[in-house]
Image (tube, rainbow, N blue to C red; front, side):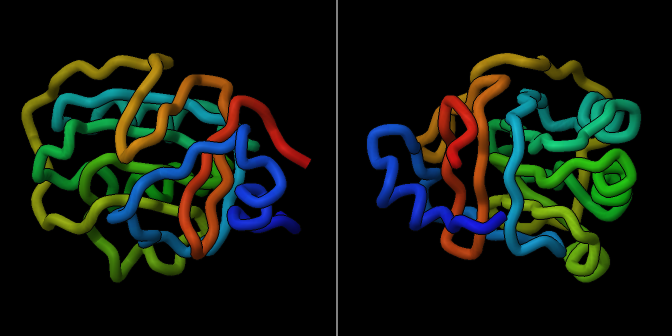
Length: 159
């Protein structure tokens, strides 16, 4: 990725939305970009496990909305699945864990913070739906760019 989020905001101010403050990168990749894949969870991450483990993630970033329930959505095992499947990054409207182990996995992982516990009972998620959080809207097929300044989303890839 040659351009930075600030450059895209300067050159295309009418085409980008910026994810609001409070999200930090816990993954091992400082930058990522890719096509948006969305999933909404109800505390349990089993549907996200299936997505990351079983689907080709080349050129994609998974955007996860968990309604900010105080449970970890992504940890070491899911980051390993994401890396093995080729995902560039994961953006979580919620919390993550295993941050010591995941800091060297070369996948970006933006989240609100950390929580050591996960939600055990299996609940159903929803795939490929529009999501809105942090002042930004994410639709399947949108494009995301991330770096040390933050996260932006656009309707299409920018050059």
